[in-house]
Structures are given as structure tokens and as C-alpha cells.
Length: 204
Image (spheres, rainbow, N blue to C red):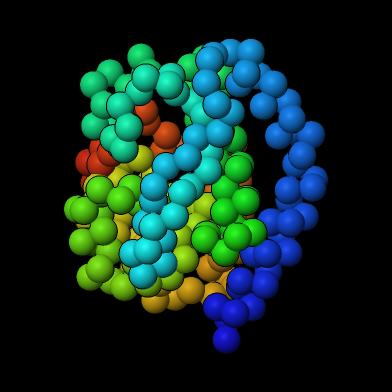
């Protein structure tokens, strides 16, 4: 029952968010166009619910000659591909704002496991162990407020599994406000990094 209610809430909140944030969208669109050549939006094939594919939307943060379908942490010297405006967008997570459109379309939720690239087989295989590929991916999630780029693939999947098992309004609220705190503090953002935590933490 909560899954159906969650979808209704996601639609309403994303619709309101798109209207309220439209001035910010406009400012960012102008900044991107002035900063570098290329499209405003970046589309990339990602894995959705039940491993179906969809095109995720982001504000473009990288040069147009960046290797495609390659996770940032696998790029050699990833900073060389990121534009000046893109660097700001990534550090503030504002590049993710266009995913509000993905939420409106029903391809994503506000909270859920972050959608993996279609070729991130290691992450997808780990998520299969916990059923985390069988719910809508999210704009943010339990793993994002517990380390983001700093946790290993196995731990990231375990966090996603914990969310899948305990999905509910209380956990969604915790993830939502935890994300705001993480963004303001810029916690867990490491360009080209993944799995840098040296200690294991409880998933809960």
C-alpha cells in the first residue's frame, strides 16, 4: 500500500518542485550555455525498476568529448573532463535537479537506490542479493546519506538492501532531510572515488 501512496506523493512533490525551482533551472541553463559548448542536459542509460532501462536526465557537467557510459571513478584524471560550471553543479548536487522530470514520468522516485549505469554489473549483481533492483531507483537514498562516493560497492548494495527491506514514510523522511544535510556539508563527494572508507559501519 505504501508503494502506491509513495508514487502519488512523488508525483505531487516533483510537480511542485519543478514549478518552484524553475528560476534556478533558468539560471543554471544560462550558466551552462555560457561556460562550454554542448547541450544543456546530459542523458545516460540507467537501470530502473526490475532492471529495465531508462534515460536519466542531468545538467551537463562534463565536456562533450568525455568517454561515454564510463563511471566517473573509472576515468583517468576525471577532473580534466569536468567544466567550471560542472564542478560547482557536482559539488552542490544541482546537476541532479532535472531528475525531477524522471520522477514525474514514473521512472524514478524521490527516495530509492541510486540508478546504476547499465554496465555497472558488479553493483547490479550485489543489489540482486537484496532485491534492491526491484523497486524504483531514487534521486537520493539510504546509501547516499551514509557515505555516497566513499563506500565500497558491497556496502552500497547492503545500504540499498536495508532501504528495500524497511521502505516506509519514516525512512523516506530520514533520507530526504539527511540528503539536505549531506549536500550542505558536501559529505561523501569524491570525484573519481569509490570505496574510500577504511572502516566498516553498521548498515542501520
